[in-house]
Length: 229
Image (spheres, rainbow, N blue to C red):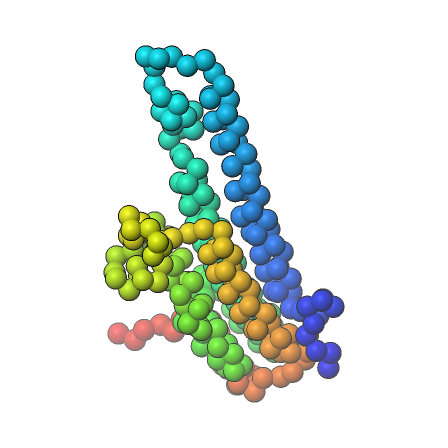
C-alpha cells in the first residue's frame, strides 16, 4: 500500500477540494484587507487635499460620508468574521465529503441524503476509524463561529469574554476580538486537523484498507436516527 503523502498528491479527493478552498480563503483574507486599506487611504488623502471650508464639516465627518459610515476597523472585523465562518464551513464540508468517500470505497451504497450530516454524527463516524475530530481547539473554533454567526460576535458570559475578547481593550470586552493573526491561527487549527484526519481517510479509500466497523454497518451512519415517540 502507498502511504498518504500531501506533497506527492496521495490524498483523498475531499482533501484536494478542501485545500483549494483553504488556499483561496487565505488569499482572500490577506488581499481583501490590503485592497481595502489602499482604497481607504486613497479616499482620505484625496479629501485631505481638497480646499477646506472654515465653516464646513471637519475632515473625519467628510470621510465618514464618503465611505458610507463603514470605517476601516469595521470593514476589517466584518471581513475577518466572514473568512473565519467560511473556513469552518470548509472544514465541515471536508469531513462530510471524506466520510462519503470512505463509505463508497468500503462498498456502502446508501440512499442519497438530502441534508448535511450533523456534527454529532460526523464525530461518531470518525470514531469508528479511531479518529477524534472534536478536539478542544476545534470545539473552540466552532463555538467562535457560532457566536459570530448567531450573535454577531456578542460575548454574553464571562467565560466567553476570557476566551474570545481582547484583554488589552477595556471597551471591547463584549465583542469577539478578530485580527489577521487570530483568524489565521484558527484556520491553522482546522488545517492541522484535516491533515491529521486525511491519512486515515486515504487508507480507507485509495489505500484499500477495509474497516470491519464500517462493513458491519447496516444503515447510513451519517443520517440521524428517527426519535421514537
